[in-house]
Image 1: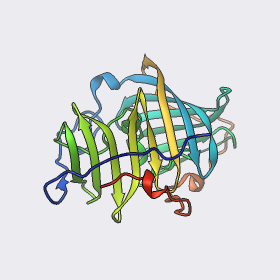
Image 2: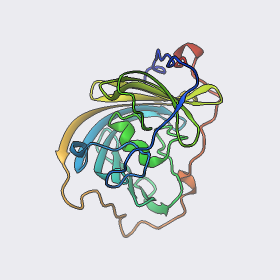
Image 3: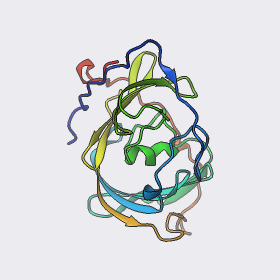
Image 4: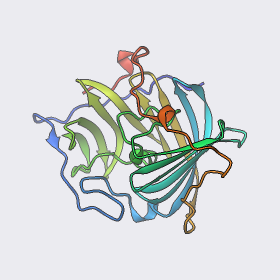
Length: 247
């Protein structure tokens, strides 16, 4: 079983209202204002060991991220015995989902959810940034406490060290909605519903040309993506107040 919601101690930056996140020059495959992955992180294939607790249950996964660019990657999940569970391919704003348990697939241009990870309200294209330990919003500040607003006027707070976050929180209605804590070669992502997603990177390899491309088995029927559509998790199991970030 996964441990309880990670305890974060996250103070707010001093000095008044949150700042607006600045725009940055986009790199290959990145929209203006988005964080940019380092060259060393692109063209890589990474294996993560995952423990999760969510509405769908709790357990473990092996998760493979094949990362060609910020907006072109694939994810493949298998259970602890190596049996495929699902695969997801993202490119040019479209997501292909392959459900290996139900033996079916779908494509959509809308936001989708990962069953084991409560990412809402983050779009799926931010998942590589989260897995690799980046702050999912651009900040000019490289050390200390950060308090800013993104382009959607959402508030973020973070603790930074040498340009990388030690922790961050996304706020909604004055309450922490989603928060992350760095751990050795991984992290813990928690949602206010009580869901939690823990991971640790175990293998990194170069990505061969075209390896991030995903195609469903020909025998899998194509369905609509309603079951994978984004919906905010229920708030009937909130994290205990003492386990939430402060701000």
